[in-house]
Image 1 (cartoon, rainbow, N blue to C red):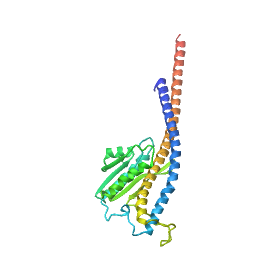
Image 2: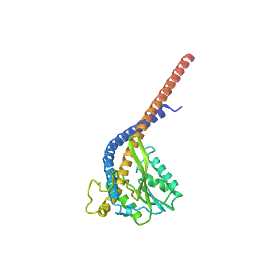
Image 3: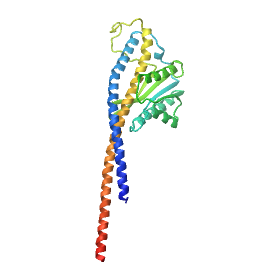
Length: 288
């Protein structure tokens, strides 16, 4: 049985760990509120952007943009994997990486080449160790998401797509559902395929395009790509904070249970030591 001193030392160590996990949970909860507000405001804008792009593309069949053109045969695919820079968030990053690995396995027999673009240190370190596919670029230091980060990723993948280095770009990230629920999501970024609009077609557009559709698409298509990536980064950020808050709350509960167990063990050891001392005193008194 451990000595009383060792048990007291372990209880103190667990209490210090509990203070850390409780503080991390409070910080994650505060960050989650801001991240949740950001994604709730970004979703309607991204959805409206896609709807506008779909309406313009639907009404102007002759209008073309390089990022809208699907290749006859997909030979090379680039997979953009988004994770967090930090850990201590349960299985949050592992679920995204598992979904990305499944996509790599599924596409390995269909295409000639697979390339990775990783966003976040966890994805970078994971694919450095395992080497599932070559990495074209890694984006890190994204502790505070800004629109410029999405622009950088969009410019990278669109330049490779326009240069013919890849024929398709697929995005894998974590979608924020709630503070306790996040799910991996796969989305084809390029070529952009606008969903058909809900209108009746013909001349029933709710607005007039000026000066012409080609100039509008030249601005709208790259912007839609940036907005979609920005939404994915915000979704991932909110999911990270929610997963970390849940993980730290679970860790705090575990420390409480461990402290109770150690306290019980300490009391039993102390009671056994007292009983032993009493027996020694009684035995000594009887011997005298």
